[in-house]
Amino acid sequence: MPASTPPSMPTPAPQLGADDIEIISRERAYDGFFKLNRLQLRHRKFDGDWSAALPRELIVRRDAVGALLYDPQLDAIALVEQFRTGIIDSQRSPWILELVAGLIDRDETPAEVATREVLEEANCQVLALEPIFEFFTSPGGTNEYLHIFCARCDLTNAGGVYGLPEEHEDIRVHVFGYDACVALLKDGAINNAITIIALQWLQMQRVRLRQLWC
Image 1 (spheres, one colour):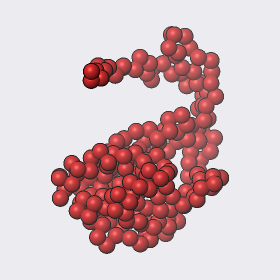
Image 2 (cartoon, rainbow, N blue to C red):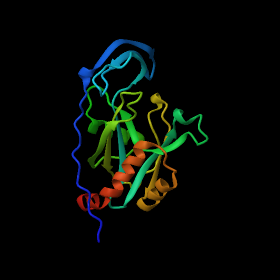
Image 3 (cartoon, rainbow, N blue to C red):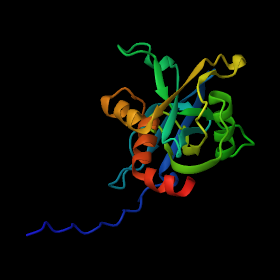
Image 4 (cartoon, rainbow, N blue to C red):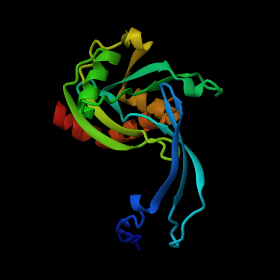
């Protein structure tokens, strides 16, 4: 007999919200490229009681945007390679393959940031944008919120080293055929979350995008 399909379950609505948090104190512990707030807080528990006062640190960042560059006619993907400080204590190389990405300025929309960053970091023009996902990157310790797009680009002549000198950017553009890029993903050569998420999304949406954009 064929296996039965389990019934879909409704998504439970959150029972606790902003009114169930008490900020006892908040101070700026560090104010550099990253901002660090030191907090004392308590929150309501699922049984209705309140937690004890908890010390917490929060990395404060502007919202960010990532863009996966895809050429549907060539069936090719462009990723950028650059140095990342967060990997210097790992056994892996701190130069990683990832999405074009940047931070949102106060007067910009996420789509405008994606278009600007694709030009600055990859020297490509965005021909169309498709939203992928938006989410908190690591809510246990930072408020950073990320918007990911798939950017339709002509990658025929893509490649080279770009970035803004005043921001100390040194960014190399790599162009891969779709199958070669998926192989890198499967082999673990791509090791950062937003790029993995974007490429897995493209695996699901590639046929539709090629029909839409070709």
